[in-house]
Image 1 (tube, helix red, strand yellow):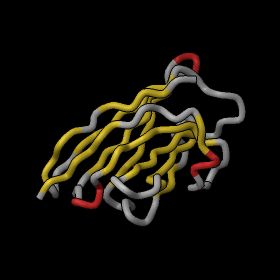
Image 2 (spheres, rainbow, N blue to C red):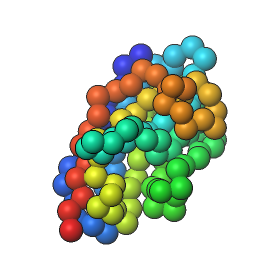
Image 3 (tube, rainbow, N blue to C red):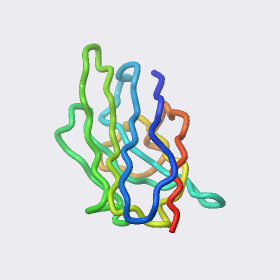
Length: 125
């Protein structure tokens, strides 16, 4: 399975941006898809995740209420994952990655795989 994230860019604080991630299929034992981010010099951190057909979501406290994850399921489980980011803050600056989740409710990156190439989000003041 291949994932491809897109939609990053430069945005002023307080603005909005939407990221997309396309999946070429659904890996065996997958339960959903998730977003992580990695700021310069920091470890990769969990942002949020959604069940494979969009029935449930969960988020990190740092983005809860500002970010929304959604998904569109297509034929052959070729999902498109979205991350709507509102009220952007300077600390949201990072490379954002999408991945397939294997354990529902987990925020541990070891429970995610098939990582896509990241897309850079830069928030300016």
